[in-house]
Amino acid sequence: MITRRRNQVIAQTFLFVLAFIWLLPIIGMIISAFRPYAETSVDPNGFFSWPETLTLDNFRNAWERGNMPRHWFVTFIVVIPAVILVLFFSSMVAFAVSRYSWKFNIALLMLFTAGNLLPPQAIIQPLFQIYNRIPIPEFPIFSESGELRGSLLGLILIHVAFQSGFCTFVLSNYMKTLPKELNEAAMVDGASLWRQYWQIVMPLTRPALGALATLEFAWIYNDYFWAVVLVQKGRDLPITSSLRNLSGEFFTDDNLVAAGSLIVVLPTVLIYLALRRQFISGLAVGASKG
Amino acid sequence: MTATHNPSGDSLESADETPNDEPSSSASSGGRRRRYSLLTDTDRRVLTTMVGIPTFLHVTLIWVPAIITILLSFTNWNGFRFDNMEWVGTRNYRQLFTVFEKDLYEALLNNFWVLLFLFLVATPLGILIAYILDKNLQGTAIYQSVFYFPVVLSLAVVGFIWKSVIYSPRQGVLNVLLNRTAEGDQISWLGNSDQIIPIGEYGLTQNFLAIIAPMIWRHVGYIMVLYLAGLKSVDPSLKEAAAIDGSSEWQAFKNVVFPSLKPVNVVILVITVIEALRVFDIIDVLNNPISTDVLSILVTESILGESSNVGRGSAYGVMLLLLCFGFVIWYLRSTFREEPS
Image 1 (cartoon, rainbow over the protein chains, first blue to last red):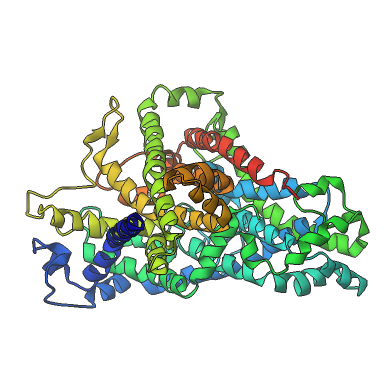
Image 2 (cartoon, rainbow over the protein chains, first blue to last red):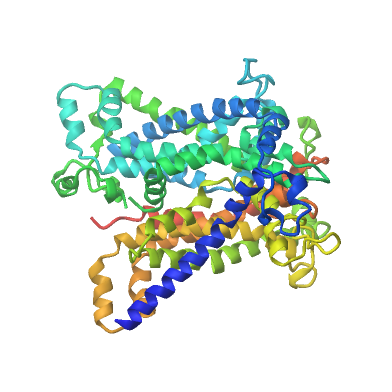
């Protein structure tokens, strides 16, 4: 018993110290975001000196200099349609492969799963060239450049294509667990295939869809690579990648960057705190073999 | 782990009663699916569209480029007009191993360092935390949230946070702790390319270790969550049996728990390898003042940088494909292998 008690104390201490270290960057970000650079940069204790002034100036500067209203707008124009489309597309494929059997069932599922595992950089050279060459009708906001490259439509499409791999895999695993009698009963009642998908299977898949929606929102919101390479134009970058614009080549105001980062992480953090269970179950489901 | 929200437990029992299932489909589900041939024409058309559109998008934007990468790697092309494209055979590859040898080896080794640290530091730490938290100590939920928190953040933003909060020479956490914030005495964590682990001219540099640290910070929580979910699914009687046997905790973990979590271990291995290969964001963010190469940076150099050499960029891309290929196949095999019914 004594050794057990001792082990518990060791474990608790270990976790406590580690958790403190883990929180340091976050605590530091919050503190420095509220303090002026002129103050923290001259004190030998940096961020951890006693604050004389607390200010919202860093946030205001990040907001204005970083042109954040524009980048927020772009972000939601990209993320919301992308998440909806990913879930819609993947659920259709998942429905087909999990509820019906035809020849290339498994092969198709493997194709989607493997596609999501490829490093995006391995396909970026040709993708960039393809995007350069596909003209699309000019349309406000979504395609102001007149070609897929640099357009928000192009960014949405690559997110949908890439993420549908993971979602199809997760959703098909989930749909497999639904009783087959559901479809049979529906068929006897004369329900069309589309109705079976939309009115019977989809409502039952809601928990998985919820978990995936949370996860995909975070992933697409967090994207940096696709936006930097395929959109490039500073003005049209979604918020995460637009943080680039806040650091200068030679001098960077660390407090400004901290404030900018804090603004950017806020939505994901709020969603995480509100929907922690969804986040975690989505990951766990994706990792298991269903 | 789907069991956590499996809406109907009884579906599993009914699986045996469906004789009309084709044997070929039994690989993925006991027999809950109906034959394609039972469908009406309209339904068949609907089904084809439902599968066709997403598949078309996925294949054209992911798999077609993957194949074109391989083809382009045998050409010399500046990316502008097609008549400038010239077939050069294996010249790009020969150049990678001669003229650009230094870039390639530096990048390969750096990818390897990332992998090594995620594997030898982040993964065991994540597993250890999961193992402790699985015992339901006080405050488990809070600890879980703390360690998982960085996983929610974008690696790019993680880079910005560490750069401004931890590594800032004038006021960052590290220099404050080491008392090195005075002008002239500051340590530039991202600006020091001294080798920590020297391997000829390609060792692990200090600034790269500073780039790896935040990756570890983020990876630990990821592993913890995956492992925690796995540990919850281990039959408690297995752990008890090992405990009664008088084996130590370590032995029980090594001989009983760890082997029974093979599916999770496979996932962790694959995720870690892929993560190490596709790392880009945080390096792009922390690449100032010293620029460090990894494969993903070399691939995109010709798009984001001045020169534009599609052939060479693609050859680097093929390297990435080759390196992840084996793991992807392995993952697919272990995931889609016939499940015991």
